[in-house]
Length: 257
Image (cartoon, rainbow, N blue to C red; front, side):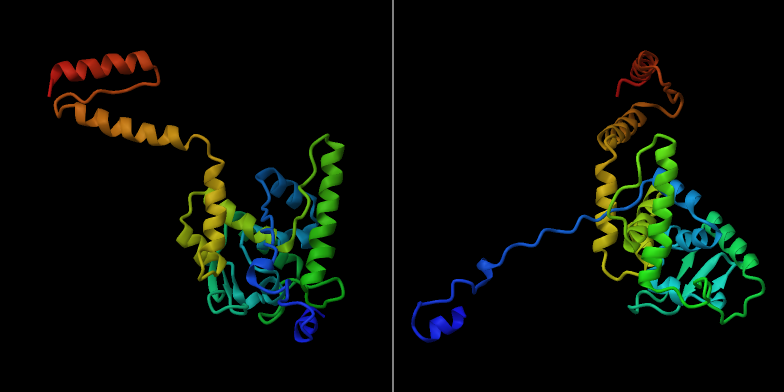
């Protein structure tokens, strides 16, 4: 309508056009589950839902990858999952299974009888493949509801709102960082070529470690004190600051340099 007004010379320019006219979209709030929320969620899940949720939380698989996963892709002997069907080339990867996830998949396989190698790992009650909506509503949504009921009964805070299928993948990244993994390893396990998500989760995890400065100081002090020692007598430091001062003074007297 405004373009037409310009064409008929009712107005000189269209005030709705131009990059500066566009409102900046707010960045989505990216969430992941905390450790207590992971435990509450998995504890509230039944056997079939638990194995699927564990594969997404502890294995980092996308919901589409979980739905397409077949038993031939799960190597229980080598503790790996080979993701052969993914939305990106980088998504084709081998995921290392944690001991808990390995146990969950072994239990799930036993409960499935003797499935053929080409059989899907996760099916609905009707034997149909799991899709995005089914996982979000029937698996994740219902399990969160059950978990929150148990938490409320125990007088504990509920699982945070806004949890989605992708929240579970970010949870996988955060758990790897908690275990000391590098961003490069996290990227390879998640099937990413871009480091944006892995580094975003990494940065937010680091922000929450308020003792980072103290750790840095400890590293510097440790290196400084090591230079003060001698080959003949290396001072031993204890947790008592007074004893550390005495040990350092003794080291300086032994070698004034």
